Image (cartoon, rainbow, N blue to C red; front, side, top):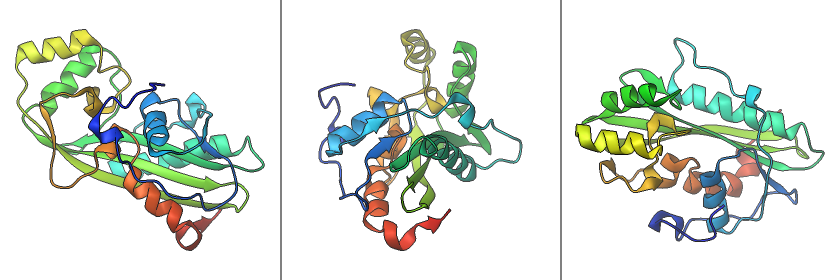
Length: 215
């Protein structure tokens, strides 16, 4: 985990008090999600969900439901390891032309995804699940941010693919990598694109008692 705030979006992130006295657990091995939580001032431990907690993309899946379901499954997997924990699960996908674009399988798949997105707007959804083991209550949502990708030249595409910055990232890019060919449309959440909607997380924690559903 980086010890420095590498991007402006890591500064001034919103934070809320936890709704229970349970330890906060991030059910993800994503270093960027951990950086977001750390930069906001949360104290937490990292306990990634098992690989098999994440379900594959099925025909007919829509991005909001898919990302929310995966966030729930990840939180559920980790929550089962604790008698007391407030678990955060998250899952991020891109959505373009009716297709869910997850993490690329290889460089050829990454190139195909980026050529599809080039010059187009698309949505990024992060499913977020906050699970209180002690209370037996959960909140599951999907947060949307619209992105505009400028047309990418062959040289820009080649540089990005050679950099390997596409690996492990939904849509084959990381907004946090400072690509100037990616712009957020309107007032969408930058942290949501990175992998954890910090603004909505604050609201969920503040309103947890009233909005959480029993398990």
